[in-house]
Length: 496
Image (cartoon, rainbow, N blue to C red; front, side):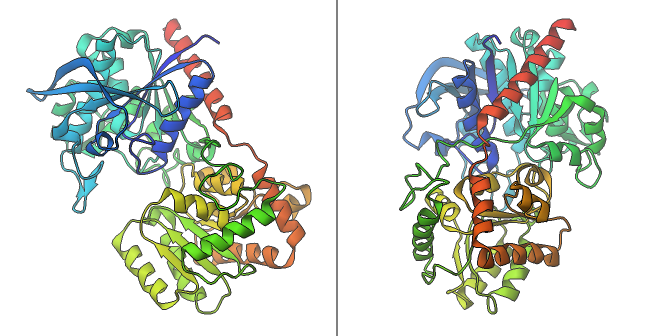
């Protein structure tokens, strides 16, 4: 395979800015592609928080103005690299749009000018690639914030040269976030109003940046095969199921990979004791005691410890979690540790529960990379009851750390966790526990099965732990699948 030059365009990339798994993917996939001999150029906004991180960021000689509904807005291009790599990262520096408290909104909700901010971002990326004279083969665009770029490439916007040679791939990380704005914001995109129709950019009277990317991209991917199937149906399609069905074989699901340089219990610098699949019992015992201490819980080696990490939103199953905690905290010999932030009602209820039963529930309403690593290593079980889950990463981290996942059987959770039913245990393929009906009783049944195995069948429990730890969910396999998609796009472009 020849070497490709891939532009990866995203609104967040770890370690520069992160709100979710999107950042992990866009910080890890290019490293893997570069290691396979391809060149990657990353593009993201120059958020104020990025510029204040103290990273080695340099100015380029490239600066330009972009027309935004008749108003000229200037910006400059900054450059850095992914740490410990040769992967170049270009930052679109426009303080009016990107010097904000956070990436997409504040306590009052989403920023009201998000349509303008990310239309500007997309136009700037297209212009910057031309100005830098990058010989791009693939523009890989992630989520609605980059959704206009495939349209700019397909429609000849700006009469740039590079889109005639390149193909576009649009990746959906979460279909629920669609970049949907009122129809007059169509003017901000700079695209002709003839594209504002039900087949292309219009979505129930509004303009949708995600739909735009889905319609105009050469290929569309999402982050697990099961999610790719689910979003073709009305119950998970968020109104776009018809559009996605129309893409047919051009919609492909690829499970996200894990960066095992960052997420491996054998080398994890955050842990008090490292371990692998042959030393996990001693290693996890030390990590469990450390985790209990960090969260102010009694150090009880035999008490099962359930970990939860994540955004506190309804999608993630917090209604099930909180109701189970109400029922279990006072009458079950189980400890819980929870890390995350999100909707106020969930935070308030969790704080109330933790205050009343502090010896059973440890709570941190924050994001901490160090605590996340310690939870993955120190917990016995990891609970992930999402209503829907495009891919999920924490269940993959849990598998590697020997922390048995308990998941709702949806999306990427189906593709990565094998339920410990009788047949799977007998054949040695079980790696966790899952439940199909989204209900409190179904989740509690799965937890009860997991706890019974943990307490009464140590040998079988160890088999489930080791099966998960020995699986390979690294980026190499996923990156190879993306490369096959890139090549298919380019071959079809040459034939057209």
